[in-house]
Each structure stands twice: as structure tokens, then as C-alpha cells.
Image (tube, rainbow, N blue to C red; front, side, top):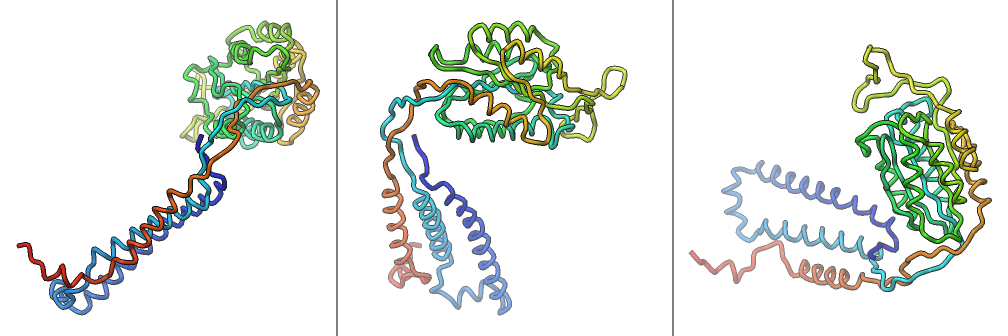
Length: 338
């Protein structure tokens, strides 16, 4: 596995396009100043020793050296040994509703974006636990299998949107059933399903799936996203809102009763998500009640530094740049092949 020990230094790569712009500007200024003295063909004849191509070559060598130096200080490493590590934790499968109704803005900035913020903070507070992610609308799909890789989990959050699930709707039962099949076979590990939805279920038997989870001692906690008053559903890429066949604006409302019934059937808790962090705190408190048991994870136990190769290349380029002069070589200038 490859990684950078200090990835924050990679932000310095923004220097590269700045250097390129400065070089192009300096070349433009040189040509502009030379044109003030007369025709460029005549002026070039007065400067037989000047090698413009070498100036470009020297710049690109220094450009490459700068990039290599930034990569070196970022600390490139390769994982050298993969080991199974046993820690005390739980398993949590997140089922996130990505139906079109989650685009409504009755929760700031939107139902879906607020859900992402909650999940991001929830992942930050996990320690030694495993987490998985399922997205659902009219159908359910595994976005991230159960894992202890929190970095990947947060990375997937940014790309979640309704277009990921082609079939629209809210198939809560399908999401819960898929979550049940996605846990590890370790029966001793405490497991929980976290369902984040506006509760507008029109597709399947959500209560039946939740009861099946409870029978396996897997709790189902529900976060209801939205308001009782409801809000229109924005159409992505436009300023309009969804309308029904009769031209009336569609108003989506939080089905709080459905969410409460699901939580009760799954022996879990229900909390309504608003513009505060109360729902997140309630969920964290509920997950903390679960007994930590031994969970096994695959991790790289040690990493080898791999900056040496880049350092040798950097040294070679610097030496090469030092011996390249701005002027043409007098010996080669006397050679005329044609």
C-alpha cells in the first residue's frame, strides 16, 4: 500500500503552475523588449551564442526538481507488511437515503448535505470500530463494504448524490436487508444499522426487514432528516422544482411516524435531524451502549521510506542543469552538418 507520511506538503504543488506562468511571462517580456530594437531575424544574427532552447530546457529541469523536492518532503512510503490486528470495537452499517427528496433544503444546507456532515463527524468519533456504507433510493447498493478504513469512508461521502441510484423511490426494506448480509460472520461482535432517511417509504416492507434485524440482535437506529412542514424538491442543474402530472409542486415531508416505527421495531433509537447536533449526540450515545468485542482488521504494520529514488533523480537533474549553459557550445557551433 502506498501513502505519503506528510500529505499536507502536497499542497505545495500549487507552486508549479505559478512557476510556469512566471516563466511564460518572463519569456514574453524578453521577446517584447527585443522587438523594440528591430526585426527579430536581424537581432538573432547579432546574438549567435544565445541558445533559447537551452533556456527552456533549464527551466523544465528546475521545474521537475521543484516537483520532486515537494514529493520527497511529503514522505512517500510503501506498506511492507500486512497483518491482522485484533481490536475492541463494534460494526456499524450506515444506510443513507439518496432519493431526490433528500435534495430538499428544509434542513440547511440540504437534507443530503446535512446527512453527510453527520456521517463525517460520526466517522471521526469511531475508534477501532468497523463501518460500512449503503446508499438507497428505489434500490439499495453497497458503496463501501464493512471496513476500518475511515479515510476511504470519508472519501466516499463527498461523491454521494441521487444519480448514484438510477431507480428513484425509498426502498428502506431493501437497504436494511442488504445491511444484514453485509456484516462480518463474527457472531460475538455487536452490530448496529444506522438508517438516515426522510421516511418517505413507498417501495417495500421496511418494518418486516427491521424486525428481522432485531431478531438477530442487530439494533436499527434511525435519524429522520427533514421537517414536518416539508419543502419542494429542487431539480439539479436548474432553478425549478419537481411537479406532479397535474403541474402542482411536489412537497416532500418528513414521515416521522414511519421513522419512529422502524426504530421501535429495530430496538433502536429515533432522533430528528435539524440544524443542531442533537441527533448526532443521541446516536453516539446509543452506539456507546453496545459492548465492544474483538474485531479483526487488516492493516500495514510498517512502512518503508521510498524518497531515496526521488532524491537521486533530483540530484542528477540539478547537476545536469548546472552544466547546461545559456550560451551555445563553441565547439558544437563550428560543426555544420548541412
